[in-house]
Image (tube, rainbow, N blue to C red; front, top):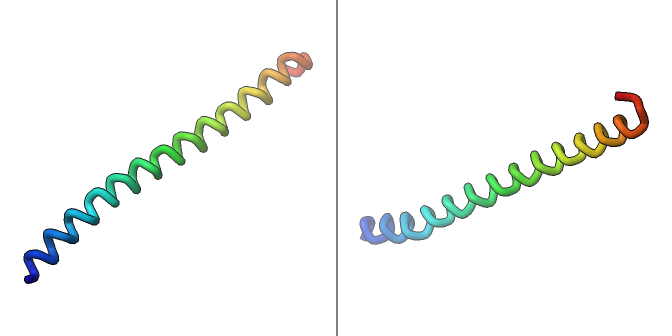
Length: 52
């Protein structure tokens, strides 16, 4: 009985962990991309204004 519960837990938790890791990586990548894009916009505005 314990073996069956362990097998079911592994079959359910392993994919959940993989999906969770993928979602976390995507969220982090999006956050970094948005931050870099915002900095690029600010830098471009500074160049256009002649401050840089």
